[in-house]
Length: 271
Ligand SMILES: [Zn+2]
Image (cartoon, rainbow, N blue to C red; front, side):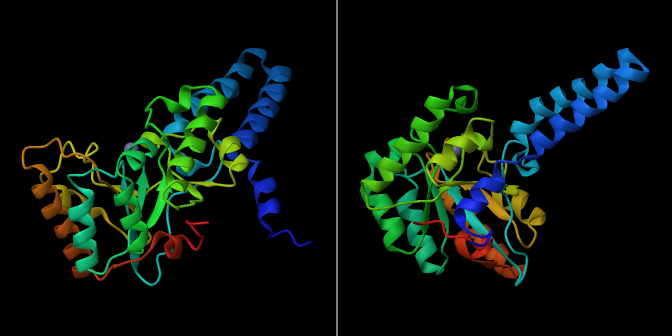
């Protein structure tokens, strides 16, 4: 068959920039070893530095492909909300999105979905897309073994399946990737979604001025990261919602549409 089927794509995705970089580093070290042996450590050292930095830069695709941007034309962005659902934020946020006719993507934590299944059902019923943000939001997940990584993804999926949602998209906790993530996602038939713009809200711990920080940096094609979790800032959930409202207003003023993530990246989110 043609090479555009999902299996062929999964096969191709096994080749990563990391593998390419390793081969280049080895070849360079081999060549240098002949001329100036001590210099052979330089490409190997650089490769190790790249390995150490790559988890923090998913866009490099060093360990595997992470979708971090969408289409720029027609001018628009996708909004993503991580860490929910939460009883203090999700309901009011869904009200606001419904009022503005905006469809967002929610990357939910399995344990929170299990605690508040009705909120996840409401997300799906109101046309939002839902992704898996791991079962327990372990911020050190990428340092754990393969089995733990797979279990966190699978348990997240099961929590969503319990409320009738099957998702294809996974966003790792704190947006950090690692070498064990991509084989685990392939086994689950899923792909990784990152982001290209964030409000530096530290998971709703810094809400004041959120829209003002975010809007000047937003560009067409961005996948914007916001949070749908307890607001540990002075103004509480109300202030946070005001900021989200300002973001929506600002995007309209900038002539940027907010489109569903699947449309933005031209790939289904829900299976
Ligand atoms: Zn998160």
